[in-house]
Amino acid sequence: MPKIKTHQATAKRFKITKNNKIIKRKAGQDHFNSRESGVVTRGKRRDIGIAETEHKIIRQLMPYK
Image 1 (spheres, helix red, strand yellow):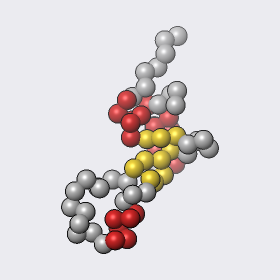
Image 2 (cartoon, helix red, strand yellow):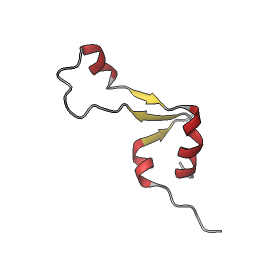
Image 3 (cartoon, helix red, strand yellow):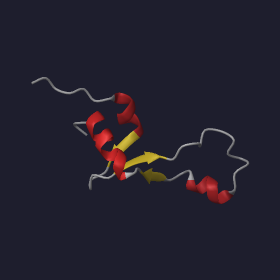
Image 4 (cartoon, rainbow, N blue to C red):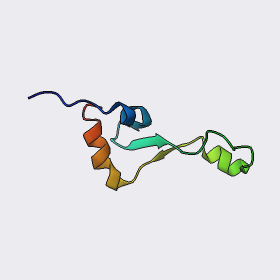
C-alpha cells in the first residue's frame, strides 16, 4: 500500500498539539491593523482552535502529523 501524501498547504497553516487539538493562526492580520482597537489587535496575536466538524478533514489532509 503506498503512503498518502501530506497536503503541504494544510500542514503549513495548522498545527496539531500534543492532546490532538488542531490550532491555526487568526485570520486578517496582514494589513489595516492600525485602525483596529487594542483589544482586537491583541486578539489577532493569538492562535485559535478550529471547530470539531473540521477535524476529520484536516486529519485526512495531514495523515502523519
